[in-house]
Image 1 (cartoon, one colour):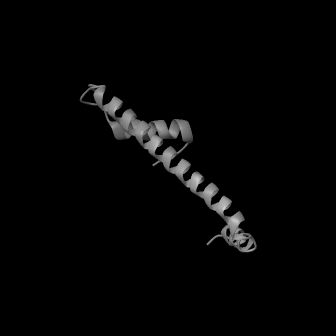
Image 2 (spheres, one colour):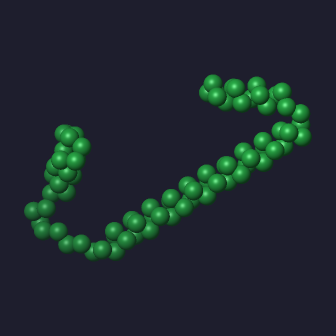
Image 3 (cartoon, helix red, strand yellow):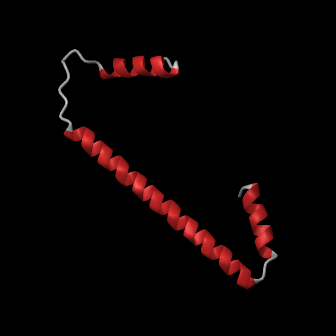
Length: 81
C-alpha cells in the first residue's frame, strides 16, 4: 500500500458512515471512468491495427524492416542497438 493510500484510509476512518458513502460513490464513478477509458483506448488500438492490416502494402524484397526500425530509432531518439 502506498503512503497516499494509507493517508486516505486514516482520513476515511475518522468520517461518519454517511460521509463515507459519498467517498464510495466517487471512487466507484472514478473506477468506471477509468475502465471506460481503457476500453475506448483498446477499441482505438484495434481499429488502428485493422487499418494497417487493410493497407495491403507491398515492400520490395530487399526491404529490411529491422534495419529501418534501428535507423529510425537512432535518428529520432538517439537509441542504438
